[in-house]
Length: 115
Image 1 (cartoon, rainbow, N blue to C red):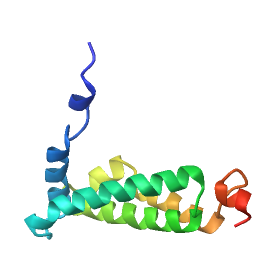
Image 2 (cartoon, rainbow, N blue to C red):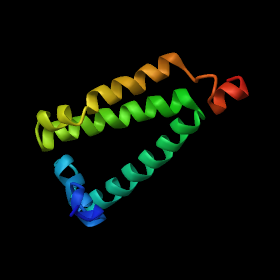
Image 3 (cartoon, rainbow, N blue to C red):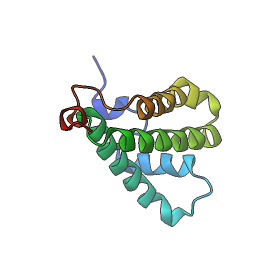
C-alpha cells in the first residue's frame, strides 16, 4: 500500500515547510521566516509558469537561476552540501543560466512574439 501524498514529501505541510525554510536560512530572524517561505513559494510558482510558457524567458531564467543558487547555498549551509548535490540544485541553476544565453525557443510565447 502506498503512502498518502502528504506523508511522502519531505516536509508534509506548509508549517513544516516553514520550519525547513528556517533551517535553510539560519541567519534570518525568526519573524522573517514565514515571509521567506511565502515569497519563495510565490517566486517558484510565477517563474515556473513563465518558463513553461516561454514568456519573458531570459528574465525568468535569470531569476530562476539566482533563486536556485540561493536555495543551493541555503541547503549547503543548513543541511550540508550533499543534499544540494543529491537534489541537483547546482545543475538546475546551470540549466537556468544556459537558458538565459540560449534565449527563447521557436515554440515559446517569446518566439511567437518575435522577442
